[in-house]
Image (cartoon, rainbow, N blue to C red):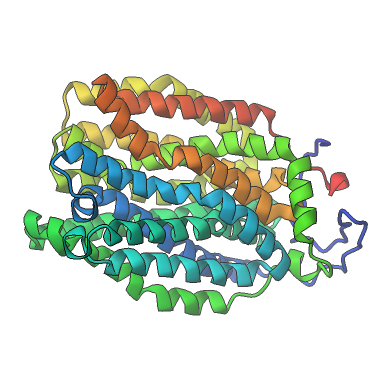
Length: 449
């Protein structure tokens, strides 16, 4: 792979050559900035639903565990719930390969509608499935199937969203535009947390555990028609529209195998993203209440503040990466995470309080925003353009098979070691992987496209 100081993602009006030597037609006139921002909002809105579902599952993992995995041991219920939460990540690589290859053939727009459809079915399954007490073993099996379907679609949802945004952006604002993918997820974090706080104020804890946790999921189902409306009005990206011969599945597989180093570097890069994200969002409510013994409301308010911080900081640092380069942000944030994650957690667990939890989570949120503001757009730049959706999705999905189990791993590590600060060590390890990837990664050269 040849180094290059910049990567053409298809938004520029120039001619490209495919792996077979096919010459693409000149690209059409680029979108205006207003059209780009409108398209970014339309695309990111669907990505928000995926993360909303994940957050609700994480926030109410204990209640979901009691509903579908009843046991006399609360630890066993929570572990089974988090294991089901994580099982969806195991389907992501398969979804990345099969759906990613399909999207690279049918187009970014159609792919975004397909993944939204599959996600919606998974959400409905979890929302409507009766508890174990009503239908027995069928209940956890249906929930697991719903999570697996969500994972299958999510395997390419984030990749499709990021690639679409990268391809409609221009080189000088690509980091800023692509950051809206991650920023949209923060809206989901805030919405899920705010709904949780509101429900906790009007529904008693026993009722919340019995049936109240289904209300946030039902709200997610109700916004699906709006998301379909937004996505069906998207236009195809210039990069794909000017490709008159999309790659065949065999070509995509061969290219993935040939570019295994790029996929491996992407995997290491995303480990930091997924691990830090789930530490500061999905795991926070359970960590705050079950481990630190703070109130559920305190934990959800902290999560709400984390989402707001990420929402404001991600586009900012995406824009900064356009100005000073991706690597400076990637290296700085990973080094800081390695040095501070465990000490910060140790300080928190030494004397747990709302303010300490807020301070630690906001610090980790800033580090996440600095890193992710550069990492996601950089991943679109190091993957071969011919298989951009598949390659991006494979790297991201393989990483989430590890990082997505963060709530499960942290719960087990605390139980096994008795060290309540151990999630900080887990995050520092992920940051070390991110640092290694940041040092090795190079933009994909135009000459090798």
